[in-house]
Length: 243
Image (cartoon, helix red, strand yellow):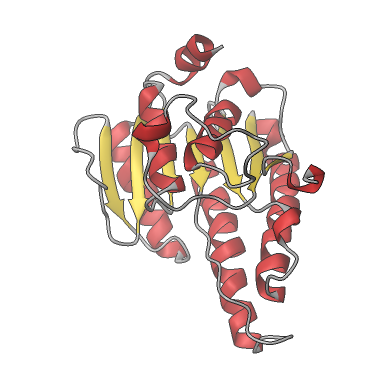
C-alpha cells in the first residue's frame, strides 16, 4: 500500500498551507517521503530546517487574504507548472473567555478557521479543473469540543459542511475534497522519532502524534482514495470509546 501511495504522489505538486512545527511540517515531510514536489506556505516563509531545492520551496503568505492567495497560486504554478494537491492546515485555537465571546472574536476565529479554507478551495481549484486533484482540509474531532469556546467549535464544525459542499461543487472537475478531524495533537516536531510507526500504544493515550495526521492526509490526497470525496474522517485515537 505504501508503494502504491508513492506511485500515486511521486512528481505531483502538493501545496501545504499553514505550515508550523508539529502537524504542518510533518505533513510536508510525509509528502516529500512519497516523492511529491512540495510548496511550504506559512506567514513567515519558514523552511523549518528543510533545504529548498527544485522540489521543495517555501512561500510567505497570509492565507486569510484572498489577494495574497491569488498571487501565491500564480507563483506556485509558475515555479512548478501546476498544482495537484492542496492541504488546508490553517487554523487557530484560543483559550475560552467566559460563556460567550465578543462578536469580533467570533468573526476573527471564523475568518481564520473557515474563510482561509474557503478562499483556498475557491482560488486553487481554478488551476486544477483541467486535470483534477485533491483538497484535504484539517478540522477537529467533535470529541474535543467539550470545554472549548463557542467560536472554536462552531468554526471547526463549519469545516465539515464546507468540505461536503465543495466536494459536490468540484466533482464534475474530478477534484476531490475531504477533511481530517484530529483530536488532541502533540505540538512537537518529532517526525523522525516516530517515523514510520513508533507510536505510543492506543491503550495508553488518546494524544496523537503529528505524523498520524500526516499519514491520513497523504492517503486522502493519493489515488488510493479515489473513491472518497466529501467525507470528514475523525482521527482521535478513539476518544469517544475511551473508558
